[in-house]
Amino acid sequence: MTDEEITALRRGADAPVVAGRADAAAVASDLSAAFSTDPIFNWFLRADALHDAARLKLFNLLVAVALADGEVFRPATGGAAAVWLPSESLGPTPFLQSLRTLPHILQATGLSRLSRMSSMRAVMEKHHPTSPPHAYLWFLGVTPQAQGLGVGSRLLAHGLARVDEKGLPAYLESSSPANLSLYRRHGFEVMEVLRPQPDSPQMWAMWREAR
Image (cartoon, rainbow, N blue to C red; front, side, top):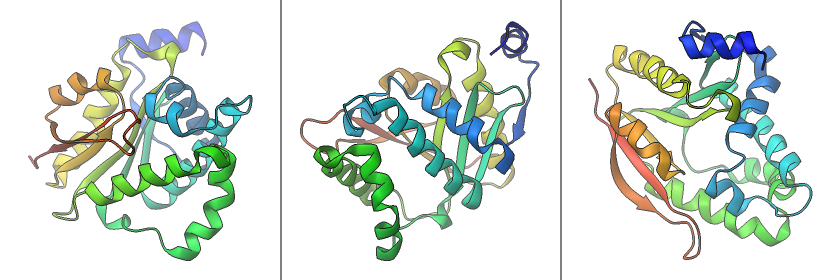
């Protein structure tokens, strides 16, 4: 990011915009950078020299899904992204779809960590509320360069304002304990602590009532 872009983010002058397909690669790059030190991602992603490339490829896949099924917001100059999905788009992954995505998942995890990814997906599906309808904050990430400037808080507030206009509750899983205070300031409370496997990092399932 340029100095001018960082200054715009610091001043809060770079209002969130809706990301489209033309922004997919940039969004994936920003989210990949944002989650480079995430405990859960570093637990299930392959641990070899392809680790960083695997994370970026995975986010390219996830962003494509997000743009098809939900909404993605980002500052106009980039540096962060928030991915929201309607709860109606969620549910157990169909068998044929799982088969199609398996090669991509294997690229991300390597064979030795495939079970970690499977465990994570299973625990998330098991504990995700099935009702009432709600907005799901799938990802909120800020690149290292843009952290500490209030970007994540502004993106979260922007998304929640839209959620509130619809009269919906909201749900998320936080994979970093450092973010719990941010989410609590915006009305989320911890419902459960999730652990995909006995030796895995924790995740925090959080819920915000409709307003």
